[in-house]
Length: 166
Image (cartoon, rainbow, N blue to C red; front, side, top):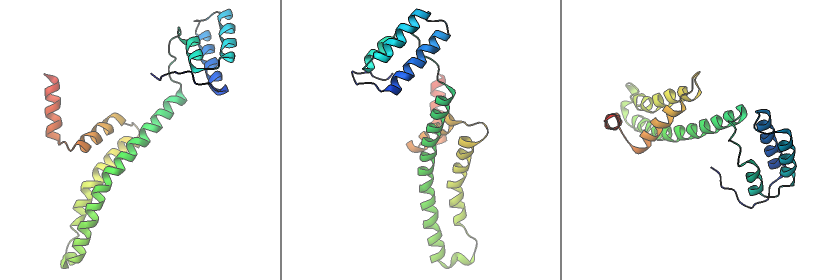
């Protein structure tokens, strides 16, 4: 929950508060008289705490579609950044292996560094699909990235799940 202070509010903050109060009126939580009193008080409010007090006895409104989309886009962007950071390590390893392959006379044979590239590309593709596919699985991507950041293996994750089931 955000902390409120005695900072001054902007006209945009007041308009947002008025919109919330009108939505509560539309839901039947306020009478006509209460609506007009509160709207007038909001327009005269100067600080965040005054606005908070005017809405303190009303329940929190559910997030609008626009707010939900913005939160989803922000979360997806954060997960994408983490995914690319983790994949960068595999790319560096691929470049090193390719340089070794080129430096040796083995480049006449098969291109074995491709196997190193697949180790980094497959998780990138799988989690990219989970982020941007038809049914985004952001929680699943976040769990996997966290597990990889901690250096955990699948057996460790299974042990944790088994321990949680007890």
